[in-house]
Every structure is written in structure tokens, then in C-alpha cells.
Image (cartoon, rainbow, N blue to C red; front, side, top):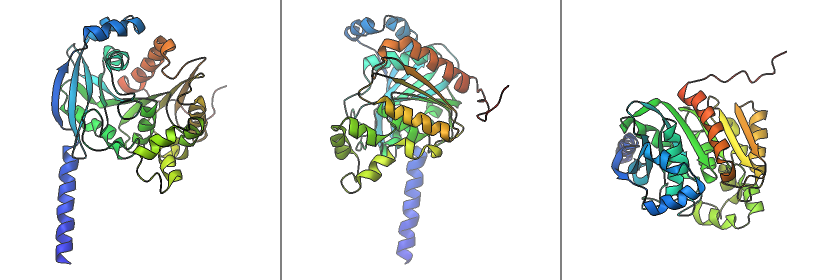
Length: 316
């Protein structure tokens, strides 16, 4: 019995040590977008070069649950302390990973609004240690970016927002059940109902079966864990949400976001919704409008600390 208590005590010490290291920066290397990439990016984003010239990019490696996890960071070149955004990428494994285009469209764009932006590749991807679980323990790689900011000189750690796209929407919803430190979050074309996802796109069953632990043992439980509509009330009530979706999205059916919207309305969670007619999954044809509504939302709640209005019926 004495040996049991000793082992338990040692495990507690080990876990405390690991937790204390979460977010620690192991490596931070300046990164430059190649000219060949820029030529392609500018065809889709005409103001790309101006955005990139205003920020510094870094490849990063940080600790998450004792694992070395890789990602990217962008920081305004100007001096000062800036609010922060955690960007959650979409896709799985290498597909949908952060590319030079992602760095320009999301990282540089938001840093040009005067935000420090950081995003994870998630464990098991792009040289990161561990195994990707597609919304399992890899959500910790998102949560552990919160203490990451304390190691960034220009980061104002009292003002942190979140931005997730596609699978990154699922990661955002899950992360918001684990912290109330996020002042506001934007979810673009976000996964919110995995049963709809696998019904509309049967090929997604293979993604879940290959990545999500326990899928063959209890499929329903695994899918519900990754479906925010079933646990929306656990999302931090102090974090307002902006949902963006396009009516022509075939990768993540608009039905998922609409179902989530109805659930958030039902539980009186602060939410704003924008539906883009004919918008595809990336909403690239509406990129300027997406940036406009996203910036206004993040500036209000993250940068300026706006208090959201009463959600009860009111007015004349």
C-alpha cells in the first residue's frame, strides 16, 4: 500500500511538471513566404504583399502535454502590446494544413488588424510529436496556446480571441468548453454535427475511424464528442460567437451551422450569424466581407472588451 501511495505521489509530481511546461516555446524561427508562392497568392488575394510586409512570420515549436508540437505565428512589425488570436486550422493530417496561402489570408490579415496570431498544426502533423485524434486529446494543443502567449513579448495575454475554420470550428467549440479565457470566437464553415457530416459525406467515416480513438467500439459516443450541438451548453457562456457559412458548401453542410445556430439561440448563448448566398466552403468569393465582419466582431469583444447586450426580449 505504501508503494501505491508513493507511485501515485510521483505521478502527481510528473503531471504537475508537464502541465507547468504547457505553452513553453521550444523553437521560434523567422519564416519568409517564397516569391513563387506570392505570385500564386496574389492571383487570389490582390493585397497579399501589403499584408505580408506589415508582419513578421515565425515557425514555432511549443510544448503541449509533454509533446513537441509545431505551428506558425505572425506578429505586427510595429512596436507595442497587441491582443491575440488562436487560429485553428481545418482538415486532417497534411490535408488542409497551414500553407503560405493560409498565412496570408488569415495570419497576416489578422496581424494587419494589430493582433498576434498563432496556430497549431496539432500533434502528429508536420513533424509534431504524438498522434492526431481529430478532435480528441489534440484539442489540448489549442488550449496550450493560451499560456504560449505569455512567452511572446508583444502579446497582451489579457485579450485573447479564437478563430477556427472547418475542422478548426470543431476544435474551437471543444476548446471553449475547457476555458473561459477566450473573449470571443469566430467559426467559419465549422463542423458542429458529425452525424450530419458522415451522412452527407460517407467518406468521412474513414477519417474518423483512422484518427478517432474508440471509433469502432462506440461510434455514436465518438461522434457526439465531436458534435457541439449535443453539448453547446458547456461552451463558455462569456464567449460570444460569430458563425459564418456559405449556402453552397459541400464539405461542411450549412445544415451543421444552422443546427448549431438554433441550439445556441435556444440556450441563449450570445451569437451572431452570417449566411453567404452561394458561398463555397472557403468563402473565398466573399473574402473581403468575411474579413470585415470578423474584424468588427473581434475588435469589439477582444480588443475593446465590449459587453454583449441582453439576450432577453427587450425594446419597444
